[in-house]
Amino acid sequence: MKKIGIITSGGDCGGLNAVVKGTAQMAHKRGMSCFVIPNGYAGLYNLIEFDRLVELKPERIDAVQANPAGSEAGHSRVKIKNISDPNKYERIKQGMAKFKIDGLVISGGDDTGSVIVDLSGQGIKCVHAPKTMDLDLQTYSVGADSTINRIAQFGQDLKTTGRTHNRIIVLEVFGRYAGHTAFRGGIGADADAILIPEIPIDFELLYAHTKKRFWRRIEQSDVRAGTYLIIVAEGIRDISGQELFDDSAGLDAFGHKKLAGAGKYVCQELNRRFKEDAGTKKIMKKIKMFVPKLYEIPEIRSVCPGHLVRSGNSSAYDVNFGKEAGAAAVLLLEQGINGVTIVGVNGKKIRYLNTVDAIKQRRVDLNRVVLHENMGICFGRKCFAPDFEFEQLNLPIIRYL
Image (tube, rainbow, N blue to C red; front, side):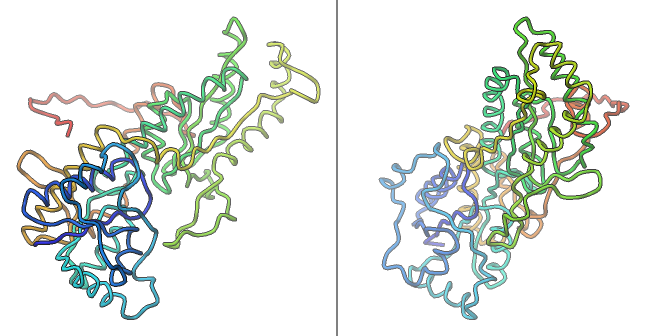
């Protein structure tokens, strides 16, 4: 293993530059050369057309800042199997041979991982550094902690405008069919309600929770000010099982439905219930907010930060994990181990899984939801009080990284 190519693929997020830097630093220290293959799998497919690649020598490594989100190597959403060229795998091998690249370090999520499984089956040596802000792989994935922190910050910030205008704020975030970032970001934002795909939403229960807490805050405020924050994951569904999204958004490059519009749907459901509730007019008058035909129900606003949760800076955790994952991937390639996904580094132990197993979707464990439900957060279902179990452990127990 003399020359390694680094590829980042799929959606951008925090920690990816740390993967690039960790890969290059370890490769250099092990006497290998590391080259950027730009623009994800599109770059890999077109590698044969390149005249030169950027080598990450020490002076170029210095120019890669580990903290900023996004990737110095660039991205694309391309599924190799879907390329119509019947000679696509041979073309990729010829491109790698042209630059004498022996193996690939590839960072991406489940779609990226599925291509890694595909490439490995064709004899192309590659190791997967897991990356997805959705946190839905079987391993931790670089980008998740950064995204969760940004969701929490946006949610907390939006309370200022919510309280100023006595608005109910619905913040819609990414996640597809796994609600990890909405769940953890919502807890971090001190949200009142968190709606995730794993729990079908009973809108009657959500409305009851919303109006009780929202009106209480305004009535108890000496300046009649209050707000209520709902974090909504794309991919949610109601108790009938219907997915709640705008079906006009179309499909992405991997054939997945674009799950936009969940926040607006929640707004519509709550707006309708406030209008139909005879008590709304009474309490609006009681708190001196009611204006006929102009201000008869509270405002409910949907906010979708979109790619803002992917951008900006990376969390320190993601920089740590990204550098370790990139470095560990190099060590695995050096040992002739490929077609696998980095799980983590524990001292001198490099832990990994077969990529085909690592990319199986992991959804939110609803046992983790119960504790927060019992502290008053609404998840769109009836809260129940379980019999909590208590277990004493012996040290050492937990490592942060």
